Length: 244
Image (cartoon, rainbow, N blue to C red):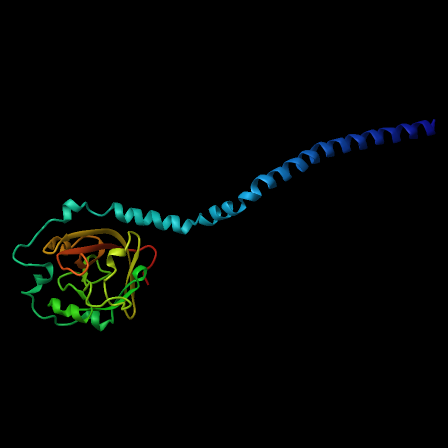
């Protein structure tokens, strides 16, 4: 009887082992088929998938959203453009009745204008005459200082100097929406994001209008080698990403 009982136990164990093997095979065999199939399908696309993953840059997506927001809150052109001054030939002549500056704060703080995308770097100068523009990028005296609330206007020559010189707005027409414009001082730096590009009449004084936001307006002559019109670049202070 003992022998019969032992044989029965061995038989049941054998059946359970066979059952376990069947279950294991039923799981492993599909995997052996599916995994190679997936590798065969995905591997040729590996480079494309890797590029796609690398392009998912949360910081860049957030930054682009911020740029879109800055553009969306800009006032319509019809509200801020088209105010001509027929008494002057150009906006640069709007300073003829101003008193001499008591202090040139931007020059005292060693202020520079930088536009990395077009390799621009030059000193910002002050004065009540457009001839001061011959010394550097001219801060229009009635406008606010860069980084302060309002419209800070900087005007520069287009072809007094030409590249590879950096202190020129020769390539200002190559600036794109979203490019950075940096105003750097001894102990401070302000980064602006370009939100608008347009061409206006040379006596369009509306580009000098003060605003409630933090903006920088860059102005130069256009078309190149003429002074017929004015190329105007509007940039908003990037207060979220870069202000040190």
